[in-house]
Length: 194
Image (cartoon, rainbow, N blue to C red; front, top):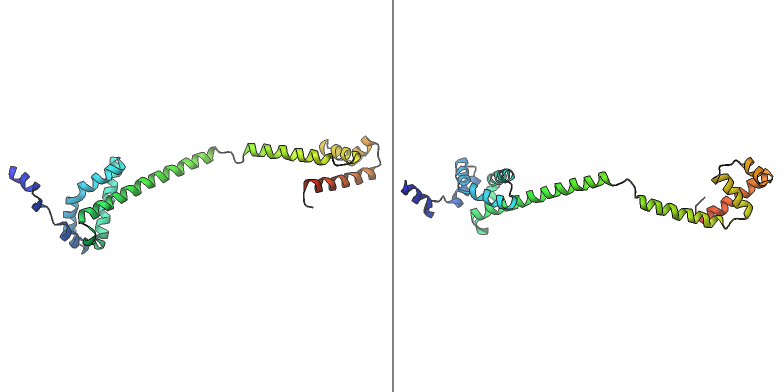
């Protein structure tokens, strides 16, 4: 029993990952099983330090090992050892998962904020309405007395032309002319195109 433990700790007893990954690149499933057994714990450890969630870590570790199977032909020994290549894949995949989760949370948060945001800005609308009213009042002051009275009675009190004429004791034609002229002056003063 002690001898088995001693052999397990002997670095020379470790599999040759570089040879195994070469065989994995050629599609050898047994070699992949050996690579899997040799690196799965380390991959899970790297992923777990980034994600901290056991279930997600296990899922990402499995994704990494599938990626090792798929991308084994891309391994280049001049860029580093097999274990470093695999652990780099693991770290990148874990970071990608964190970013994905954060992006999803940000989207959910933004969607929640949009649900609570009124469809229009009430304050802006109130300010614009107040400014428009003030501009209309200023422009009304530029009208003659009869024009201002005619517009006020017709548009603010809702009287008909005939009722305006009766209220001001003026002929109907005069009221219509004054209203037309007053509206033209208001349009010009307000900068409204015809």
